[in-house]
Length: 220
Image 1 (cartoon, rainbow, N blue to C red):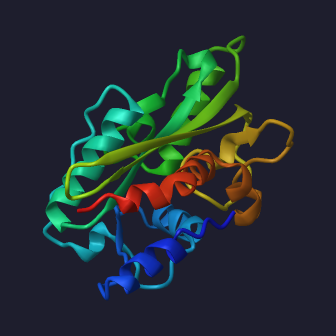
Image 2 (image 1 turned 90 degrees about the vertical axis):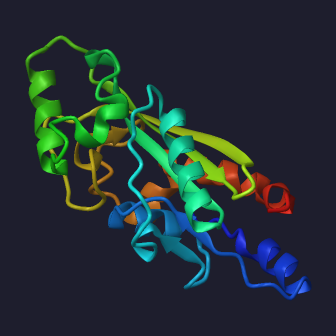
């Protein structure tokens, strides 16, 4: 999935003889950055990350919902950088674990846990509940904040189930154990383009793309 939001912003800014649009992705996760940049399809140099702003303070994700965390990150980064900032909070919601890991997905096995450690804990928890439902969904909430305080939110989900064992080496996070509905292989086995076409982040970015013209018509 390639979502081209550049053409409108470039025309608007070139008409004003202003600098081309730059968008800050509020993440230092290189794999997440690559995935979002691939799907936005903005030209090189137009997508920045927190690594481009060494002094940007870390945002504590202490919200009770994906939306609270995404909005907090986007607003904070937009204020610091003076540029539009796109943040996401996403995670895995497993029915048989009462919605866990949810907003704790990235730190399910501890604050410094690796993806592999989080996956291991997930599978261990499910193994301890042999009759628990393995149905699950990935949820992504995007928040796009501008320095003037305006913010917009977009949500995407993808339904599936948790595999018995990890499969594949692509992707990141819980991709090796998430099998989307209608498929027999995990996200980590799929080619990136196939995953993008159905992923929760792809769905949220598609919703963003539908409204991008109106969003950037708001003056900073």
